[in-house]
Image 1: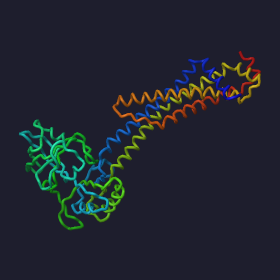
Image 2: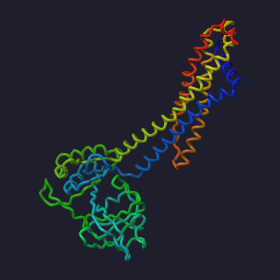
Image 3: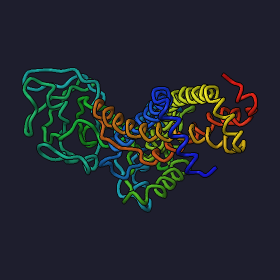
Image 4: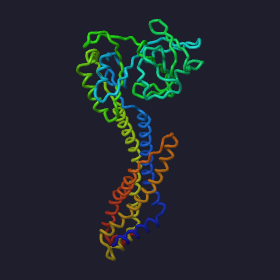
Length: 411
């Protein structure tokens, strides 16, 4: 039997049972649409999260000494001396090193109002190399100046402005007066150590505010010691090499390797390391929710198999007549298999269209930018065809085995 004739007879059989055929194809439509929608939603979520995390970030390498596991800076111990900082600055591919110390405080006061605050950040002006200021500029080393983020600026009834004075009450009971010289544009930070989001953050220069010192094991002199370092590479291309050089120094001839407590380890991480971890998590999540949608395809496959078996039963006499006039088993097999494949193709095409609309609606509902996974479309259509072939194979084979004499007697 020619392919064109097989196609014509299959279409006629589908049209003669429009409702039943439509319900079978509708199962494929729902299954494919669910997969397309969830894949689109997962892809959009992945792109949005990764863009939010990596957008505007400098080529940073984050260094701290902490316990196994945890986020960047978790449990950080002050083990990096000024000598280590200087040595790291001279590594090829490194533009600068930004030390970061935690200064315990009790409270901050301004305009006759006092608010509780348990710590502020002591760092260098390089901390703000990629940060934008709403007002003012970075502080200067050796000056009693502070920079605040918007959340810290609004801690008081009288919003902090450039030129205002704040009183910092330290944990040893002393009070230090400092002038506000800069208000950042955004509260969220630009690195893994600035994950506080909208939390109030006050930055001061290491000199004269930060005084934590330790005896350098390699130099034998008292030096400032920091719990966190941000090593800034000259560009993104040099990050891998800079990371290897930083790890090699810190794990061999640094003060930090001798000052790190037992059961703690020196951690060296880049933004790309975290991005890779996020990608793995998001890919796993997308795969999981998509696999749930695949259940719909299994149900659709059962529906197509059912309609084809019923069709074989109903058309038993027709099969007998076909064989009586010369149709071969392969012709009958081809006819019923074509009918099942057509149901899968039609269902997959409409499913892709419905899935695209569903993906758009879903991303708009949750406020994500639409990122359509075009590579899934041919796969979805292929799955629809495969579902039709697999589920129609047994009914078609069953039809081909019908004895023509028994079929002609069938009522």
